[in-house]
Amino acid sequence: MAPTVYFVTGANRGIGFGLVEALANRSGVLVFATARDPARADRLNKLAEENKGKVVVVKLEVTSDEDAKKAAEEVKKYTDKVDVLIANAGVSTGSGPVEKVSTADLHTVIDVNVGGPLRIFQALLPLLRASSAPRVYGISSTMGSIAANLDATMPAEMTGGLYTVSKSGLNSLFARIHREHADKDKMTVVLLCPGHTQTDMGNAGAQFFGMDEAPVKLDDSIKGLLTFIDDESGKYAGKFMSFDGTERTW
Ligand code: NDP
Image 1 (spheres, rainbow, N blue to C red):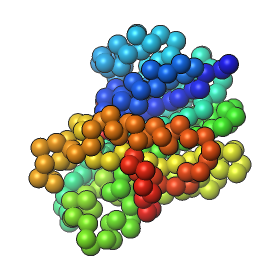
Image 2: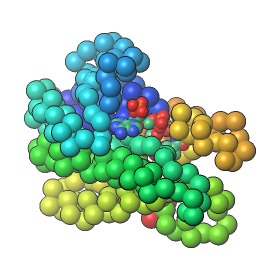
Image 3: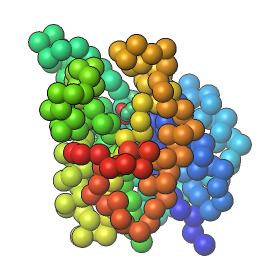
């Protein structure tokens, strides 16, 4: 039987690495795991070495059109389809109140957090179309929820900065992908919030909440995310789900 083919961006550390590590433990999988600098992705390279034939490291700087195209070409050397795309790579550039943030940071955070998923979605689309059940997951954040931004009871830290703006943009992009590809390409498109998770990014943000580290353990986040990523029923299509099983407002 052909393996289930996954493509995970930003897989050299954090949530992306956690997802690839969990998937690599399974049989019948082929996982393309991206890093923008594979030569320095030591943990990921080790994982790929230990899981030869199951984990393949692919170079991908998500702001590069050329890298996205080359990544798709690399996948084609191994397989003619991608079943599951997980657009995970992201940055949290540009914190602070609106009156102080810079447009340079805006460009960066949008290019990575919205442009990145768009580029790789476009590059992999022919391969996704070749899957009998293509699924596309965007790793977003509750901070990207416009409803949460308008909720005056949410702490200001939850709604500040350009990260929030970029994740709202990602949510909007995924709404479009869902609208345009759910019927036409029988594609399941789901947005996921991993929770405030113990990664470099999550722990760096913990200070805003007066915490030493983020509250959600990486394993718990990964387990929760995989319940949606593994679901082939389509019941989460067009939804914004949190790792803890609750639905988020867009
Ligand atoms: P980390 O900072 O730990 O890891 C980010 C990953 O994205 C790294 O692999 C990094 O690669 C990659 N990346 C960043 N910029 C680029 C780029 N330009 N091109 C290619 N890869 C890039 O973050 P997390 O693992 O915590 O975050 C993963 C996702 O989850 C992000 O989209 C984030 O917004 C989202 N999220 C995280 C939360 C948390 O609390 N941790 C909460 C809500 C959402 P490199 O090592 O080269 O920098």
